[in-house]
Figure 1: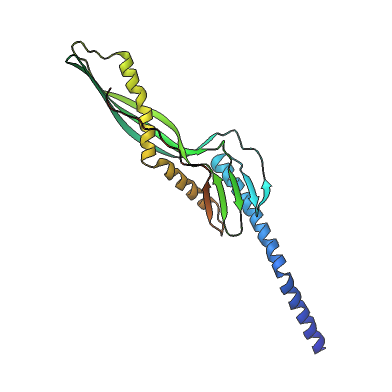
Figure 2: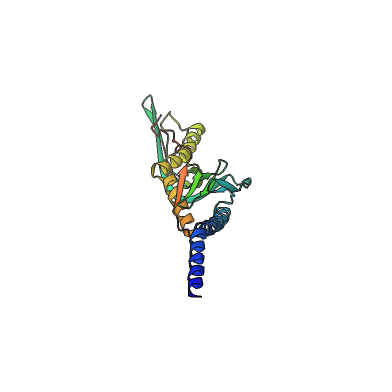
Length: 218
């Protein structure tokens, strides 16, 4: 009886050791699939978007994104000033403006967004953040000075006013608002997804280059 018990115990232990990798893989697969569903829910809540989700290179969710085109993750209030002066035949005119704008940085969701859930990490591929909007809050005219025969025209004033949003957009880019939006998305995902493996954002395009905007007087 003792010998039979020992043999049976040995067979049981051997079987447990042999099937342990398969059982572990099965549990890991279930955990990864559950994590994939959590990520899907998080993106729907945060971005109103359902990305393509793959688990160990196997696609498990591949549905079209919602009509939402952009995701704004960060806003910042900015103030810009612009001054225009022009002298003709000894007569000078001057315009000075101040504008308050709210700049929004976020992601263009019309491009592909994919989530790859791996045992060692979660890789999210998406476009770089960019300035997705600049909203005017207030514009103040600080100076309108006419010369004796060199007067400010409506076209002069309209041209200067039209430059203010571009200046606010450029300022938002210069202070690194898109980079802050990428960090904010990383924080939101880390806060929402409680995963053992790290979440890594991989950007599939180059950061958008802002064209130079001159504010020099004409």
